[in-house]
Length: 192
Image 1 (tube, rainbow, N blue to C red):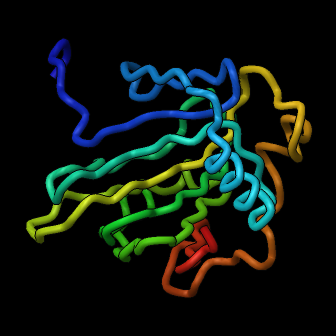
Image 2: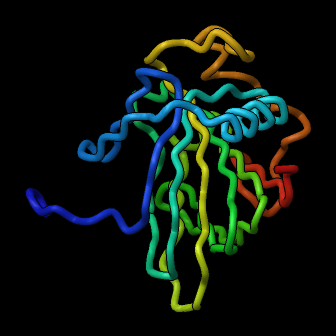
């Protein structure tokens, strides 16, 4: 498919710190809009709950059962080595799958208000996806909060040094459930 333009099977946008441009799949370039107050408040709440700091959030809108994202890992160089990623689901529940590279997938449903945390190291050992489905589903919005190694640092908030921002320890309160891979944690309802 070299040279062929393929539409992204979902709508996406990005908010974040100034200069934290984001390139993925070596072809999709996103330039962040400034944080809105509600997104900044949600970012700060997730940072307080997880101990991880985030500089960008990518919003994905899955409009129907045919909107999806295939197997991938979020390992773009702009996020640094072994990034932590926090994902908030809003709207319709959708199946989320995660699997060890070359392993079998674990399926679970991300419901409205759920927080999924992929701890440092998960992106180098696992793949994940939101597959298409034959079921009728309504709109789902997913907000993925991510670190970023570039751009201008915020003057407010809990910003720390780059190494601490990318490699914080996994908080004890957010340990994985027995049925999930050890690099993943899911909280069914966060206070939005």
